[in-house]
Length: 311
Image 1: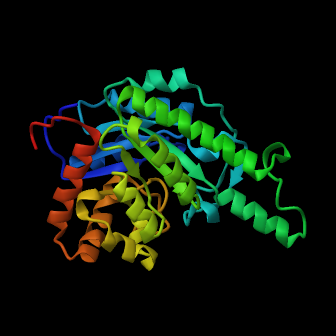
Image 2: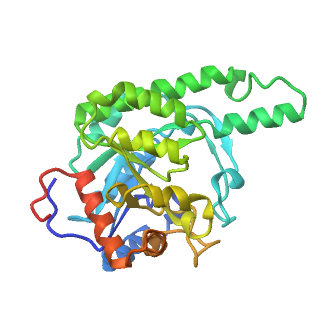
């Protein structure tokens, strides 16, 4: 893909196609584009992936999509506000209906030229950790829980199988991965290491990176980039790893409607607010906001395209 212009900022992971924007999605996108902010709306299931692609058809450029099946949607499960880091109670938690990965369905979506990545896909063990803790507190078995009482290892194996299918799809359509990972970095790194030879170069991005420096080092060695969002504006837990990762491997995101940055905490997040992430990143990296904006945007354009003449 070749771009006709270069944006000021690039929100590489957002969800304006979600229900939280049902009444004003077009206005939210307009606010962002009028301010020079481009975006990738990221699908998490069949319907949200299809809607993300639908939004791309309204704009010549500046609105792109990623399509994939999120690991928490590989089974029926409930995810509350605390787990999702939601301070805006209007957003609330949600219940996943569970979905079987349909390779041909996602492949058809992925072949659209404005689909720039496969995902969000990956591994998420947070619900398993929570369920084990709850069962231990009740002095019950921690080995089986969740959908159909399946053992946790079987449920992890299901996530692995779905992730491997999406790695295969990314390789087939020659697009990078948009990866989600929570409390599963050793397994994620093992899988990516075993499949690296089939992936495109660069292979993809770890969105909302929550690993430690050692995880970052291994993923850097594999060629992956990392995105950070609003959480870095109000939590100091990410400072060390943000400072460690080189700027040429960092991108910006909002993960809207979730995790709004300061000064919008407690409100619905949106792509326009990515500027606040750029400001905090500039502070942590001892750079100007202009430098951060330019560098992260260049990183995004390079990740999502090949042969960009304008760069």
